[in-house]
Length: 328
Image (tube, rainbow, N blue to C red):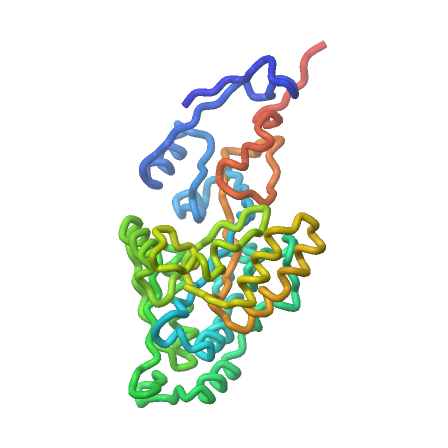
């Protein structure tokens, strides 16, 4: 797609004369094109490719996505229908360790809202990593250690299958979770699936736990993810992946989304946040980054929070790649 500057744009002619967008069907082809200098920028990658580590011309922009990567616990069946198990898994999750394995500049997620969004309240953050407390909760709930170190209750082992899309990042996350949760007696089996199969699993809710990233957006209306109305098995688009049901949460979510005043809205959401913290239908991990790689600095492009890859173009009329002096 070839674009050129529109001379009569109402805020003034763009600084760039134009640019061309190329689309690739896999990452390897895109990175190869960059190395051959067929393109000057790369978007859509989750991480910096190893083959570009030593490219001194490369400049990396990291935008915080208004999204949250979480492990959603299916609360309607199996071991995860036990609130004690879910609360223990939250306590057994070392988010800092996961963050360090991926990227130290990631922002951690501790609740359904992102930091600084309307409704966010620090006092409702999920508790910090505490495996000793997790063990105590499981013991009190009747989950006792078996001979192999896996906890058992009513002759059933505490085993969880976590479904995720097969990506290098998810492999690292699941490796960490398996190690951390095994430390409190939980057997974790990772089910990494190719994109098409994974989307089918997501749509059918064919999982006991789901590692997934949900878009929250600049306006934090999370009704679709946590209202019990969105867990109806007859629905073809169930975004309440935890199948979480709480009358308190439902009422608060309805109250919050129907108010315009941000102060009133935040007050309405408090009951939802308290219920979510107590019921632990998911464990928040981190706010993903959207990478944009360019050959050198793009003047006029600044890092900020965005909803999608395309939102980086908000300032495209001010982008420039070269500066010079006009001779007198």
